[in-house]
Amino acid sequence: MLTIKDCLALCDLSEEEIDAIAEHEHLPEMIAAELGNYLIHTPDGAPRIRRMIVDDIAQARAADDAAHMAKLVAVLRHFIENHAEAMNRSG
Image (cartoon, rainbow, N blue to C red; front, top):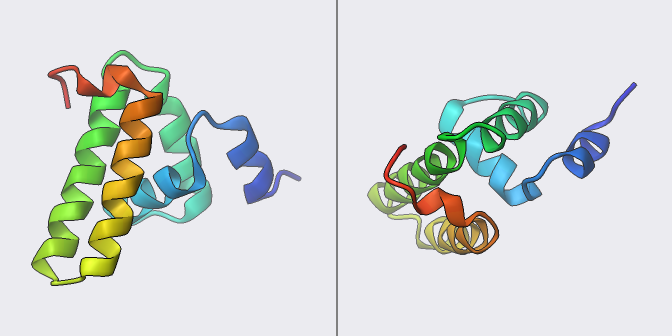
């Protein structure tokens, strides 16, 4: 049986990026890892994931949660640094 650590190791996303997808889509981490791994391998997936993280940042800002917002901004920076295709117009 695969554990969440196994799935994260097989995924092209960081644990924090998966957590942002889980937060945005209201999914358990394991399902978010599957979704993220699928999306990152599709032509419009990286921009869609970027949009999810940006939406999470907006939610944290609206909730006046500066610490969570700062964490998500760091996640977004890391994601863009590792997935330049995230800056395409899609998503």
